[in-house]
Image 1 (cartoon, rainbow, N blue to C red):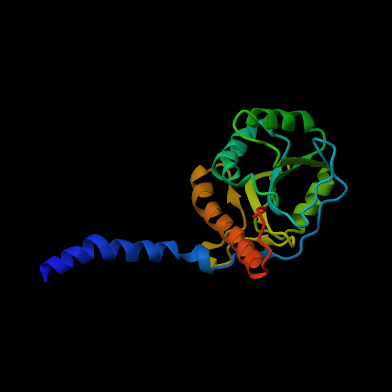
Image 2 (cartoon, one colour; image 1 turned 180 degrees about the horizontal axis):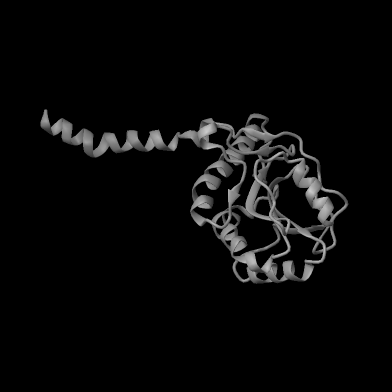
Length: 213
């Protein structure tokens, strides 16, 4: 009898525990919609002069404000904890909305990231202060932009332009603070995996799975 118990503890219990945690929340939960159908960007250009759209892309969206260089550490955190894991997906983009006139500073941040990773998924997009304020307002978030029109938070937007997050009162989360690497490694990574799982499941169901996701 004791031998059977020992065998159970050594071999069976670890397998059961693994299956329990492997089939956790990320596999069976969808990430709630915080703000549905947000507007797409205006006719704004990125550093390479091309227009960037939110349509048909999973977007991690940030707002740099005027102090891009002062907050460059936040982009390094996001790059290390999230971007480098997933930048190869064609349907994914990391977009930073910046005030017009900060192009030189944004380019410096991008150049500083290049030695560490392929930066093709990073998009710095430029708009006037009024356009940034109007765009942020329609997101209907509890958080606010600071005086420079920036925030350390980034937001997850799905392919249908829905801003996603956690709506539970005890665990409400509309954005993820790039100043804190632990928040990116835990809450954001967990929620990001849910988004990717949703699309992978949809592709598999429709029998058109691709390497994009």
